[in-house]
Amino acid sequence: MTKKAATGALVGLALGDALGFPTEFHDVPRILGTFGPWRAMKLPVTRGTAYITDDTQMTLAFARGIRTAMERGPLTPLRLARPLREEYVDWYHSPENNRAPGRTCMVACRLLDGDRIWQDASQIHSKGCGANMRVAPIGLVPGLTDEQRSGAAQLQSALTHGHPTALAASDLTARAVHLLARGADPTGLVGQLRSYALDHRSRYDERWLGDLWTRSQDPGATHFIRRGWDECLAVLERLDAVQRTADPELDPCEYTGDGWIAEEALATALLAFLLFPDEPLTALRRAACTRGDSDSIAALTGAFAGAHLGADAWPAEWVARIEHRDELLAFGALWDA
Image 1 (tube, rainbow, N blue to C red):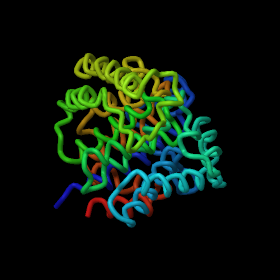
Image 2: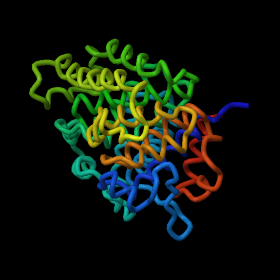
Image 3: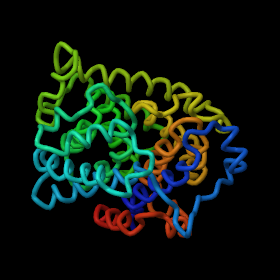
C-alpha cells in the first residue's frame, strides 16, 4: 500500500492554508490571546466548512492547468502556458477571489487577460511568495523529467512573479515536495536542496522562460537567474545553521524570515516542517502561529508534511471539513495512481 503522497500534500496544503487564514497579519501574542496555546489550535470552521485562501485557489488553478496540458500530450512550455494562463485569468475574475489575494497576482492576471505575450504581463521585480505557495502540484505529478519539473515550476511563477528569486524558490519548493514524496529523509533535505541550487545556479532555461530576463536590468540571462539562486542559497544556509538548534517554542520567522517573500516562505515553512517531521499537525500549528505570512507558511508546511507522510497524516474530521475537498482528493487520486 502506497502512502498516497499527492493526496497527503494537497490536503495538507489546504489544511495549513485554512489554519493560517485567521492568524495572518497578527503577531504571535495576539494569536495566542485569540486562539489559545498554539499546540492546541483547532481548525477554524464556519458553517461546517474550513475556508481556504487564494493560496489553495491558485494551487488548484495550477493543478488544472497541468492536467489540461498533459491530456494533450507530454508537458511542454507552450502546452502548459496556454491553459495555465486561462486558469489564472479565470481565478482573477472569479467571485470567490475575495480572500486577500496578493497585489502582484492581481496586476499580472489583469495583464494576462488579453493578447499580449505572457512575458510582458510578468511582474519582473516581484518575488512575493505567491509564486511558490501554489507550485506543489508539479512536484507530485508522476513521470516527469527533472527538466520538465523545473521548467514548469519556473514558468508558473514567471506568469505572475518574474523576479529570479521567485523562479528559483518555486523550483526549490517543487523539488522539496518531489523529494519528500519519493521518500527522502527530512534530515538531509536542506543539503539536497543546496546541492540542487548550486547545480542550477547558472542555468537560465530559455525554452521555458523565453526572453523574460530582458525585462530586467541584468546584463545577461545568466546574471539574471544567478541572482535568484544566490538569494535562495543564502536563506538555505541560514536554515541549515538553525534547523537542529531552533527552539520549537519560538516563532520560526525569528530564524528565517516572515515569509512575505519567496525565499523566506520556503525556508520558514521548511523549518516548521523540520522541527516536527513526524508530527504533521504540530508542524502545521507551529507554522500557523507565526507573525508573518501565516497561511502561506502553513500551506507549504502542510505540503511538505503531507508529501513526507502521505494521506494518513491528516485527521479524517479535518479533511471532511476542508473547502474544495473533492477536487483536492481527485487530483491526489490522479497523481497517486
